[in-house]
Image (cartoon, rainbow, N blue to C red):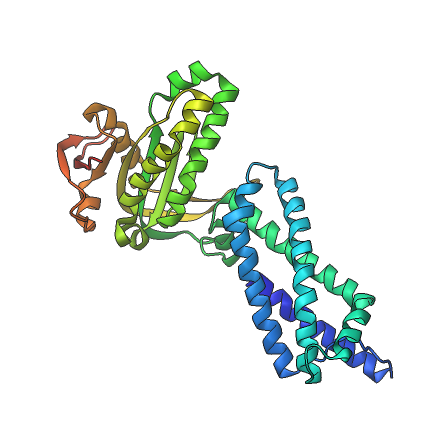
Length: 348
């Protein structure tokens, strides 16, 4: 969408400059007039290029430069994409010129116009415009990745500028034996383990429509809007996908850190108040009893010697596939609360 909007701005800007040039009796031979055919072709080309750039970002470059600093990631990607888009221009310009002139793509007129364009200020202007579009796209992407997918858009739209009440599902996950692991590895090595550990959860969370709410030491809090969490049992499938992601990296963990980390999790649902808070540093936060309850549910995993505990309220909202075997662990009184809650576990 960023590419499409900025592409249209560039198209109309160049058309305005061209109109002014023609009124001044100049002969801008390198500029292509924006006929309906040219506009349609340019719009489709912009959308396709934007999708290709997005795909390259998610599938390849995001992983290739994932461990670089914020500024280096933007610089490296900017250089790559500028070279890539230079190739796109060399392909798309002759096509647009042929559409405008209504001649063959291989006509000598098109070749001459192409050469004139490459030696003109319009070419330099186009490259500057593309570089700016790239920078805006990459900057938005990296900022969004740093503060959480979807969070930046919520700030832009002002969705939570005024607090609202909504129904959400929460998953509190905690690494097992984290204190012992930290003592064995040392602070720096343990921090590197945490980075790898959280990184391996990314696909599982995104693929199951989850949102990372907080990282708290070795604990990660994942949240879903109620509808997203129960759809396809996303909240439960996310847990098992996270487990699978760690197993798939077992050799890497053993070779690098000498251990394979595991985790336990508690899941619950309920009403929260969601809104922006803070002056020196703004955040979108959730408040409500459901967060305290979920944390206490997760804390009981060791008591029952299980990896996952789910509240009765959430179990009743799900339509779990036959592959999931639901076992009751009983009704418990949560620490610091007067209420009793029925809990269930789901073995792997």
